[in-house]
Length: 440
Image: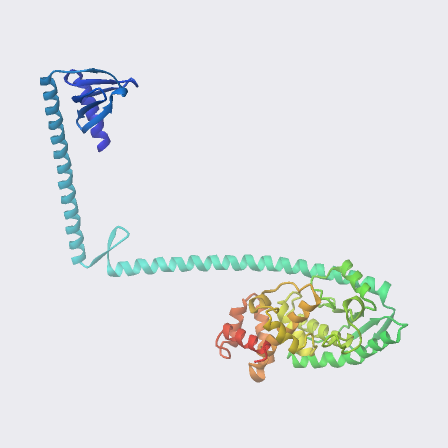
């Protein structure tokens, strides 16, 4: 409105050029006005919008109208202002009338028991129905999006697992070929196993015999204790390859590069194979203890660990199950002492261990030997709490929980479904686990 009024005045003044004083500026502009005061330094003039003072330096020339003409001009300004004020007042009164009518209408609608929702008036029942329909639509949309995401996740997961299984098959073949041609030249058969190892060294042959004597008994014990004997029943033998030197283990890793390899070997469920690196560059020996370390793993202990891991993978029918579950279960049921508890307590106190979320979310084994041992020990303690905390059916509960995780449930979802009545929450479980690691 101000801009339109300003434009009106410009047109108005241009129509009455002869009835004003004209001040020509040095910029070339001409101001239509009534000159009020002049001096050698300043010029003060009046327009319809008020008084203005200019320095004389900015003025090029002044042409004055008569006093009567200026009086007429001032009167025209006053008339225009009066007209503007009338227009403004009319608009204000119109707005008041409209606002009043709007308030009156709203009051009438409310008296009828209507409610305004998104610019429209509805009865309370209509509004409830509209809101319920909107809520239902949003829930259906959310559910559809979740289902779409699940389908996408399943497809992607299946593709990843298929690739990893294919890679694992190729890796084990490469490792087996290398071991049979470069490392192993002795074979021992049992009911469930064929064990390959190096001959010519009394220590190596003793290790092979120890594992042979332990193998079948361990198999039967593990599937019974794990409560998976209804799911796992071997009709074909498992091949066990034992490295004679650490450099051969390093060489095999460089050839095969198994995705689930550890500092001590790996197992492959699809081909039913176990690869063990019990000494050499890995820092292991056939001795049980040394003064420098709290313990040293033996080949027989490693066999127990990887056998339990292999059976667990077969039970889950998933080569790539959650690492903490696989490692923790293998250590718990085999009793393999990956890390001394006193040493672990010190590490936890010094904040060197894995945090709860880091442990359960880990997708690759730690690279260093010490971190791997620590990871397995902490995972085994978590498995121990889940099994022991559930009572007599703890092994079956762990099986159910693990199956849910493999089927795609999150840790929290699977935990609440299986252990919801035994633990207050996942936070309660993590606290019990952390307290156990600290020896409380």
